[in-house]
Image 1: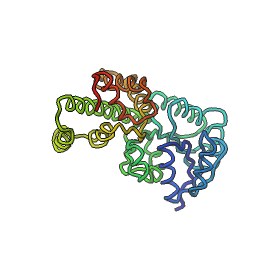
Image 2 (image 1 turned 45 degrees about the vertical axis):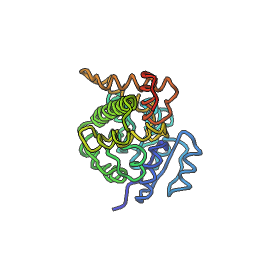
Image 3 (image 1 turned 135 degrees about the vertical axis):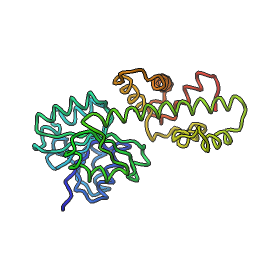
Image 4 (image 1 turned 180 degrees about the vertical axis):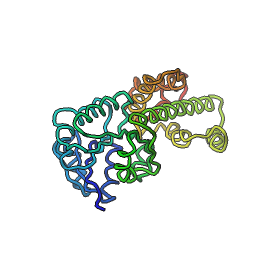
Length: 293
């Protein structure tokens, strides 16, 4: 059976790597990016065709994947002038891998449905390295039939691919996950500063925590960049702050640790680290304490 024609919209840090995996898997691929030169360069480096609009992507595709920054951008490329809805045929499947929150997803899904176009919300977690080697975790919300239709595309980009419920549930799970990650990153930053202030050997502190009950993915991934003040972006602080805020907006009960992490991320952003990796949350802790790692 031939592979479906896939369109990919959004070739940033994550999207470019995800689209590259689709090209490598042999899917006929059409790409668009807000910066035209980025799409042209990507197409030249991979087996893909650049398009001049989201509508043109839709016209050339059976499935369209979007990976953009926020709900406004998803709305624009899917429902805006010259968007996917204006160029797609009834039955087209859209897979939105952006993180935009359940309310925006449900609203956009309704707008697409008016054109006979289907939507899965399929946000991802794993940052750039896992996007590059196709080992992302992908949580997909939508109907079982739509998930089945898009499964081959999702499998080409992720290792753990789950159908988590109806439309919007992928967003909810992603936001909770990222808020826990942000809270864990804040805890790691605070622990490192406490240890530094006490004069203990930080290599020993990290080794003990990694081997014991204090271990976490954030400790393994972010302790070294925090200590080195190497904030090369794998997942931008601005994006993490956006996700935490969306989670808090959607939450029906208090989520105190997420609120505390959101405050620290905001403070780090105000210090100029919005485009840096969210490991720069440590800068907020350093500013609060007057200590530096």
